[in-house]
Picture 1: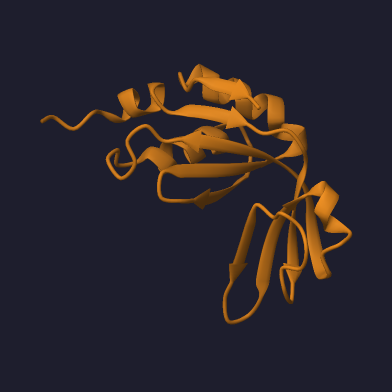
Picture 2: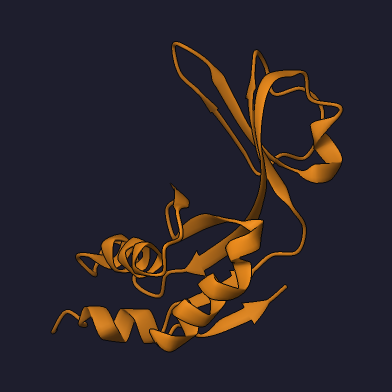
Length: 132
């Protein structure tokens, strides 16, 4: 069986732009709330959460506001350079992105003011894009 090319994986990987605004928080613990991501290492706890959870989450630093874009990768672990393509497109559009990967999905966080540009760039690259 032939491995699909990167362009085919792009055309068949839907991007869903989620509603809401997200913040990155440096915290001692996750605290209450339905957070998108909690990551712990030896130095800190990072919480990525929706705006509605920020006040209730004790934190020492925050960086706000981001848009969450979910990439439903059609063939996880197959297309070499998939994330490089996505992040390269964003860099070429002068956008910075933060990336989180799960088993079958990649998520990119784009600053709120870059939302429309990011969507346009992804559509131009032939990603199917929808809004949740």
